[in-house]
Image (cartoon, rainbow, N blue to C red):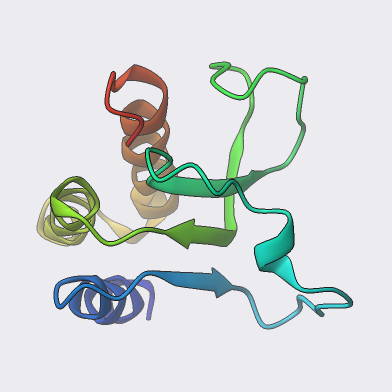
Length: 113
């Protein structure tokens, strides 16, 4: 199921659509766009389980239950890489490895991916 979702979301950003993705157990009480960064350089905004106050900290464990993705070449490449991992992982490690690739891209990219 996760791979179908990843492929679908990859197809959404390819023609230039940005999106917010949330798990089904999220309920919006306010407009989420009001609190997201308007900075166009922020390609990925993603939730974390514990936030230490530093946006690019390696110890903020990401949680894919909420994310905002801006469509551009970097995020398209990120989702393509994420989807190709399906051929190289077993289900047990899939979620951890997907989170690792996103975390690595966010923390280590000078282009804010």
